[in-house]
Amino acid sequence: MKTTTLFMLFVFMFAFSIGTFAQGTGTKADPRTTLQSKEITTSRAEKSAPSGGGLPGSRLDLNGVEGEIYVGESWPAGTIVLRDGGKIENYLLRYNILVDQMQFITGKDTLAFASPQELSTLTFDKHTFIYEAYQCDKTIRYGYFELIEPGKNKLLLKRLVTFEMPDAKNPVDTDATKYFIDECYFISKPGKAAYKIMCNRKSALSVLNDHQDEIDEYLRITGNKVKTPDDLKKLVSYYNTLDD
Image 1 (cartoon, rainbow, N blue to C red):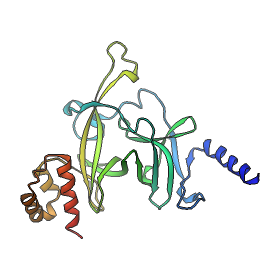
Image 2: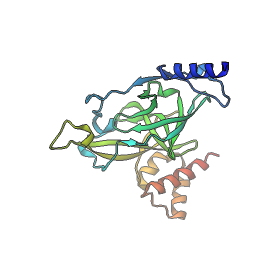
Image 3: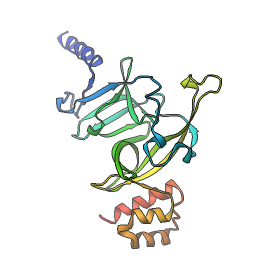
Image 4: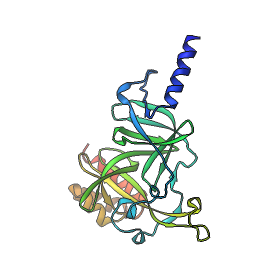
């Protein structure tokens, strides 16, 4: 009875706390892994993304394809690993592309992590996300990326909203808005901000220039034209073996 009472008290405190508490491999909560969260509002101002989703160029410069603004729209259960090794299991997660937020559900509330720098990885529905610094023009920014190829040098995917098309009959109905999504790839090297890389040979050689001779030989032997995301993934996988 005492155990049941303590458990219910814990659930009550968790549901009304604004912090999230990570659990390690054991069953005890580790107070060092407390993460702050913030409430999600539905104001129009919050739903307005920066030009190009914070990346170079304007929305009209990027075509994109019509798609959903959420990865994990149905709130799949996921696992959060913290930078100190703590782990949180069975969180209901989704990624909001428009506002570049990782969101989760606590009770009836939708929240977002206010201290994403404390997160190592978030995995749900076969997607793994990390929070990284990246180069944007001459400034360094931070945002969420999907991890495509792990390793010393990571291949990352950044999704961004390039255009919003409100419903002509009811422009204030945001649920009827159509969104166009573009996908950009980045390389994250140790100790450096992630840098954009294109699916072509010239871009790949300029970013992976510290092993240009080996990369040239690899492309010649394999016939990899670096024209698709899968080509790029294979190239980065090979690149990671050169420093082993």
